[in-house]
Length: 584
Image (cartoon, rainbow, N blue to C red; front, side, top):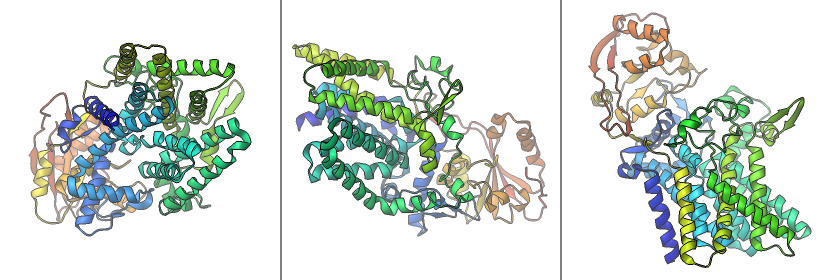
């Protein structure tokens, strides 16, 4: 117990350091980087779950965005249990604290679960901690924490693998229950991760058949029973998705809801040769070198999706483990760790193939990859580069086994400890990500939204520039401050979207105030946007109520949500005709 407590404290301490200064502002800031607005949407959704609960509203029909029409949030796949937990936590502790605790725990739990997995294999404390550090503090994990908090929940994959090993070795109810639980938790964090978990389970079943042949039947039966039980447990969650996904009639709502993704996305969001090999572009020393390749065919176009760096020191340790496996296979006996090395090398290869584009073209030959076949079956999945997290887990485990081999060569405990410390320090340096800090301060908000919050009555706000192509998540986040309905957040090709683009409809829609974000207009650099900004003061249907000067962030090292540009608030006038033009 004392040993486990020390390991827990190690991962908590490292999480605090590697995510600094997030721990200083659990209720006032959140993890994020400069070019993403997706965390705003997640925070807004947490606020909406709380708001709907306190006002007796159904959470899946939201009348406060795309007003006065509202939005049906259940078009996209939902996570009912996750929403229930988020609602309770947000009501009790607030959206920011709920968000941050989930992210921070993902780092601690990812390290712990990997530790238990590798310790089960090696019985080496330091090597197990080393693997936990690699997997927990992967650049992939950080970029997901900054943009996709649901995809930051990577801790269930090592738990799944540990359950698979225990099921084969012990064949008891506890190991079966752990396997069912890990599959269920993966589904509750992300449908992608449930998909990956099922592939991992399938790869393990294939490996068992290869090495045990006829003796594998009993293990396969147990695996099948656990998968069936997990599916029964998850059926309320999965049935609506399966029903929609396998419907013979493909509708627009299925596309909008994300059940069908464009086939071309499989190429844009697949791994590239340098994605795994180049340091993360946010590394304070090596990131600038990687930035030269971002956008190229060799690396990929997405800062988030193509950050798949495995680390040079983990790759070296994994190679040492692989070499040991090859040598022992030639020997008269093959020990327990060699079987695990073979499996994780096999898993890394399969996951790497899954992360590739639909096909490789070699001259006139076209070699099809797994994503090509899987898209026909499951068109809701498009970002196959995310399979990289499974590759990373396999490398992390192999690296831990490799370090255990090296440490076993020395009798001196000091030398063994020194080797482990150097290895851990090397990984932490490779995966370091600040300065600048990847934390956004939300404790201070633009004064314009505080003013709107104080205005009495139930009315609607329109924020400009209008979010016509996709919902502006920052506008929705502002709503958590002023708590008024907004016309923004519409979905393209809907009635609400059409009405929102017509200035003539603003008064009829119940809009009282129009919020003009001048800086947002100027930053676009588009001539038509600047012309639209210039026409606003002379529009007879609008009356300027108040202008709020730009506000600077107090600490230059931490980004905040204050707007540096002027924010103007106009009142929509009833008597004036606003014309039929789409632009202000």
